[in-house]
Amino acid sequence: MVVSLFICMYVLMLLGDEIYNSLLLVDCLFNALL
Image 1 (cartoon, rainbow, N blue to C red):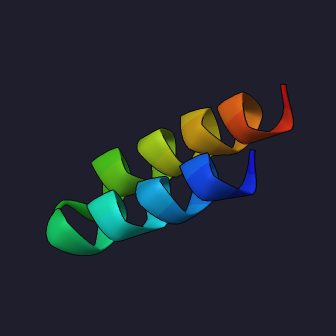
Image 2: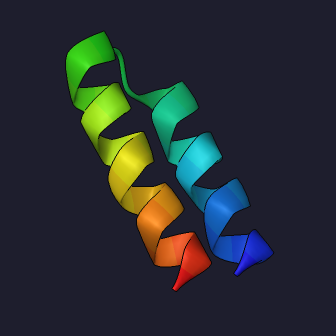
């Protein structure tokens, strides 16, 4: 869903570690597409 994608983006902005953010973003993208 698009809403979940925006939520993921917001969470990524709050976090600091880039590597963890990248992995989380990929996971969020898969969840958004499913």
